[in-house]
Length: 216
Image (cartoon, rainbow, N blue to C red; front, side):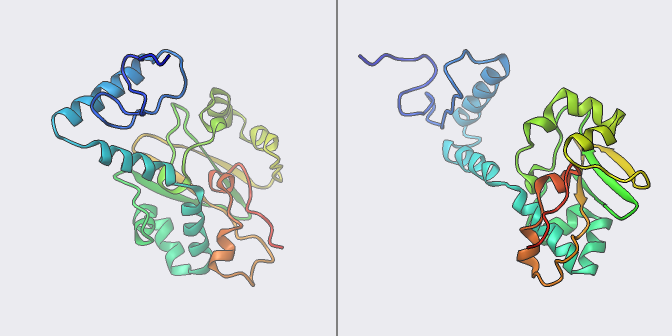
C-alpha cells in the first residue's frame, strides 16, 4: 500500500511544485533542509519558479571539461587568443561563449621549465563553468593539504613524474579567484585541427595533475 513521506510527493515534486531530488532515504542534513526551505520560500514569494530552478540545475549539470578543452585548443592554435587568455582568462572564456560569472579566472601556462597544479586548500573552489563538477579527490582533505606540502609526491601518485629541473608551482583557489592550467601542446599534434586538439585535452591536464593525451 502506498504511504506518504513528509516533505515531498510521489511524483518527485515538493509541496510547492519544484523538482525535489533526494539522493537517498537518509535523513536530510541541516544544510539540505535549509536549502529546500529557501527554495520553497523563493517560489512562494514569486521570486523564481520551479521551471527556472530546474533549468538552472540542468545547466549546471551540463557543464563539462569539454568547455575548458575548447578554450585550451583555441589557445594552442591562435597566439593572439592565447595572449588574451593569459592576460584575462575570464574575458577570453566569455569571448568563446563561456560565462564564468563574477569570479576572477587566471590561466597559468605550463612550459618546459614550469609545471602548474591547482588546489583549493579551504574547500573545493573550482572553475566549474569550464571544467564541470570537481572530482572527489580534488575535494578530499588529503589532496588539499598534501599538494601544498609535497606537490611532487602527489603528482607522482597521479602518474606524473616530473624531472628535477622542472619547477612546480602550486596555485591555491579561493571563492573569488579560480585557476585553469594551460597545458603544453603535445608533440606530434601539428596535423590536428582545433576540434581534434580539444579531444587531447583532459580534465586533469587543466588541473595540473595530468598531461594531455598523445595524438594517434
